[in-house]
Each structure stands twice: as C-alpha cells, then as structure tokens.
Amino acid sequence: MSASEGFSRLLLSVRRPESMVSAYCLLLAVIAAVGLTHGYHYHRKQLYPRPEPQLQVKSGDPLAPYDRGGIPLRRPGIAVSQYPQFEPSRGWVTSYLTPFTRWLARHSRHCGTTIVSHPGGILDEILYYTRGLDTVLESSIMFVGFVIFSWVVRMKTVTEREMGRRE
Amino acid sequence: MYPSGEVFTVIPLGDIVPYLSTVNAVILGVLIAVLLLPILSRTDIYVEVDHRRPKIKAKIVTPREDRIKAALALTSTLASVGVVTTGDVFNFTLFLSLLGMSNMGLIGTTVGDDFALECAFHYGLMCLIASLPLFGGAALILASTGTLSLHELMKLPRGAGGWTLTYGKALLTAGVLGEAGVGPFYAVKVDSFRRIWGRYAFVIHLTTLLTFSRFMEILSLLP
Amino acid sequence: MQLVPATVPELTVRMYHAAVAVGLAAGLIATADILADRNPLNRLTMTDAVEIGALALLASVGTDLAECLILPGLVVGLAELMATSEVLIARHSDPRSLPRFDPLDMEVLRTAPTALMIGLALYGVLLTGFTGGAVAGTGAAFYLFSRVNRPRYEEWRGMESLSGLGWALWVIGFSLFFLHPRYWLLALLLAGTGGILVKVGPKLSLFGYVMGYDVRVGAGDVPER
Image (tube, rainbow over all chains, first blue to last red; front, side, top):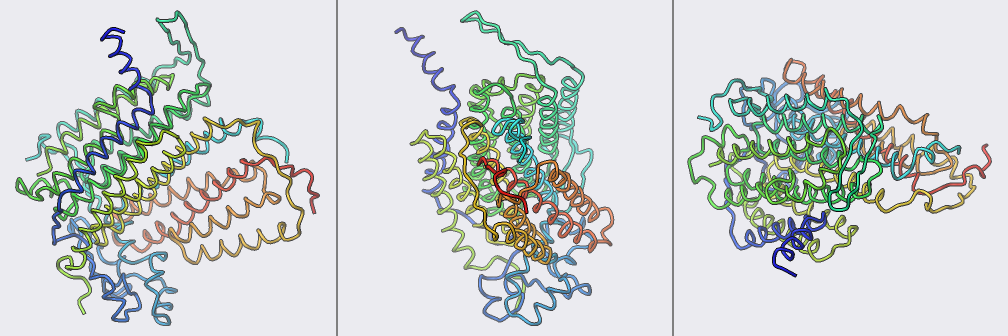
C-alpha cells in the first residue's frame, strides 16, 4: 500500500457519519478536561438577582422563593432588567397574582412552590416579557421538532397504508 | 463602534435588541437572494452520476416530500436571518439550535435513501451534543460579565471577565462548529448534505456558512 | 427583610464554583462514553447526560435569569432528542415486524381513561402555563394510550391545527407586550393561559396518539359497547 493510498483510506474512514460524532466528542472532551483545571470568576453584579437560597422560606413568606415585592394591579414589583427604557410596563407582571393564587397565598404557607404554574410572577415576567423572544423561539423549536417527528412517523416508521387501516 | 460597521436600525424587544448593520445587511441580502433560486426553480428529477463504478441514479421527488422540505428550508432561512440580526448571546444559541434542527429535518425527510437516515441521525446527535458548549458558553459569559446583550458586552474594557470569558468563547466556538457543521466538520457533513437529493441542498450550505461569518463578528465584539 | 439584593449573595457564588465543575465533569464523562461506544442507541441515551451538563452550567449562575434560561435549554434538548430518536427508529424498524398483542377486554379499561382524562384536563386548566399544559396533555396521552378507546386518525387531526393556533395566540400576546404596553395583563393571559395551555397539551396528546402505533392491535376483536 502506497502512502497516498493509505492517506486516502484514512480520509475515507474519517468521512463516515459516526466518525464525525466521535471527532466532535474528542474535541469537547479535551475542552472540558482543560476547563476542569481552572478556577472560575463570578461577576457579583448580575441582572435579576435573587436573595440567598432558603432565606425567604425561613422567614415564612407565603410566596417563598419568588417574592419580588409589589401589590397585584397596584404597585409593580422589582425586576432588574437590562434595558428599562424599552420596557414601559416592567414589574407589573412580577407583582401580578391571579385571584385563585391570591386566595391560596392567604390560606397556605407554601403557595410559592406552585406560583410557577400560574400567570404572574418574576419567571413569567422574564419568559413572556423582557426575554419573550427566547420563549417564542423555544416553542418554534418544539414545533419544528414535532413536525419532523410526526412526518417521519407517518412516512417511514408507519407507512401510509398502515396508518389508514381499519380499526 | 460596532465592528460590523454602521448600525442602521435596532428593534427593541425588551432585553433582546436585534440590530442591522452594514455587514449584517449584506449577509441578509445574500441569504434572501439565494433563497429565491430554489423557489423559482421547478425541477423535480435529480440525477447522481458515480464515476468510479459507471452508474447513474435518478430520483423523482414526490410533491409530499417537496412540501415538507420547502417548509423546513424556510424555517432554516428564517433561523439564519435571526442568527444574523440578533443582539443577544443566548438568543443567538437558540436561533442556532433552530437552524440545526431544521437542517437535520431536511436530511432526515428524504424518502427512499437509508443512508440519509443514518446521516440525519448522526447530525441530530451532533446538534444534541453541541447544546452543551452552546448553552454552557452563554452561561459562562453571563456569569463572568453579568450581561448577555451584545450591545453591553461591546462596551466592556478589553480583558474583562478574564479566563472565564475566554473559556466561554472557546465553548461557544466549539458549539457553533458542531451545530452548523463548519470548519473541520464541513468536509464530513458535505456528504450528508448531498443526501437531500433536491433543490434545497444548497440552502443548508448557505445558512451554515453565513452563520459562521456572523459568529466571527460576535467573537470580535466580545471583550 | 430585603427582597432583592443589590449583588448576588456570597452563598450563591460559592455554589457557582462547584456547579461549573459538576457541569464540566458531566460533559466530560458523557462525551468520553460516546467516544468509547459506537452503538447508536447508547450514543443517543448518553446525549441526555450531555444535556444535564449543559443545564448544570446554565443553573450555576443562580439568578432568576438563569432559572428562565433553563426552560428553553430543556425544551430544545427534548425536541431534538425526540426527532433524532424517531429517525433512529425509522432507520432500524420494519413496519411489518411490529409486535402484535391482544387487548384485555375489561370494563375498567373502557371507563377509567375517560374519567381520568377529564379530571387531568380540568386540573391542567386550573394550573395553566407549562405545568398545566403538561398535566392536561398527560391526561389526553393516557386516554389515547388505552387503545380500545382510541379514535381514528381523521377524528383527531384537528388537534394538530389547534396547536398551531396556540402558537399564534402566544405570538400575538408577545407582540402585544411591545405594541401596547398598557394591555400587559391581556398579553400575559394570552401568553400564559391561551398560548401555552393550547400548545403543550395537544402536542403531548399527538405524541400519545403516535405512540399507539408502536404496537399492532387486534382491536377488531373487542366488541363495541
């Protein structure tokens, strides 16, 4: 086997799709191994800071980990965002609670654990308003994923004839 | 001063502020002009000639396959428009994920070619694995500088963030290499991209390459 | 008590150093495993471990922003994993070799799924948002899993367009936030209730519907009541 033939055989073995994944993983493993040997710096001044973990829970706040101040529909809550000048109604979503959540907060001390599943609160402020484009994109990615998934199922995994069979 | 020239317009969407500058506008123009080519062409029989073993392979693309490929090519183009205009690091990674996803779908929806499925599977694996360096890089940039907006990152002095930011940039570069299939992986992926068997094949090439040229601009923006 | 501190507390910073190391170590272990084994199924499952590393790195920042960035990260991984695994199934499966089984003819299988679906859907509507959509969708998926009751594809097709409608509602809510900031409450309810509830629920139910085709059923043997 000549040198050029060996070289082209090497190139052929590399161009298989599974070698591509292996080569990429090798690159990532090297980068991660380098990263493990260093310390990391943290910038203390962050956007949307939150209090120390468990601080609100210990003080008995009914909206425990997600209380950011404000009164629903009266006073906006605190949201330290990047561009306040582009967000005229900043903070209102943070302070908003649905009537049901308000009732729950009065009668239960653990309302904060369910607040993520009701409209209103700091997470909804970031997800829908200040960084809304991220969430719209995320749902579009899910949309494309489902389109590919259902198309492959209908055309390949289960053929059209199987799909239309009588049940 | 932006490295991509004069800024024509900004679109304020809360914390995410996409902008259009000279270089971005040129990239965008190329993207839309080239997308017009498959829209205007009406061919639907594709021929592949193998020179080593004299062999000719022809394929007729069914309207059904053509329709899903048109939809996915449109998504891919829209995603790269987002990649080119976005003004936020995390938003950039999400647009890139959308791009990788629709490119994977373009390869995977080829009918009557088992090797296409093999390629699509491994491209999907690449996209999945690349989400670690992409999101991890964005997270490290956020941790070391306290912001994700490119407009703010640009104003930071040189050397801000230190090793953490450098490492974040390295991770981000690795993620873009994997997700868009450029650099050393392009030579491998070209074989998968050929499996599309149709007029949308060069949409993939174009979007991934323009994505990387935009990433070069982001790298020069970061301190 | 101070609700929102000016700078990130000391405890979060200490946890950050550990979390970055954990994320990188998870990535290193998972990528090493993918390198070592070429079995496609093993590679697919190990990419989930890679995702965990990505989520750990995102979570290490420890602010409210980081908590919100986890959600897109998680969903992107989920969607890609689903499409990729379906491509793997299509590559290696033969539609003629699907396993065959005979369903049980039991009273409870006919009545319970409907009751459970109604209960879960009502609870999902009460919760709203991502969690509510997931709960309602689980109810619908369970209803479709119980194969005796499964409707025909043509009857269930409308759910797909419903999910597209939900996506459009959400985008309307998002643009309303910036076009008319005074109507933020309407926008919030559109995005939270209308958008996500309608979006996540039908998708999970479609998922359940498609899953039913993994098993070939002799449903014709069961008498309709």
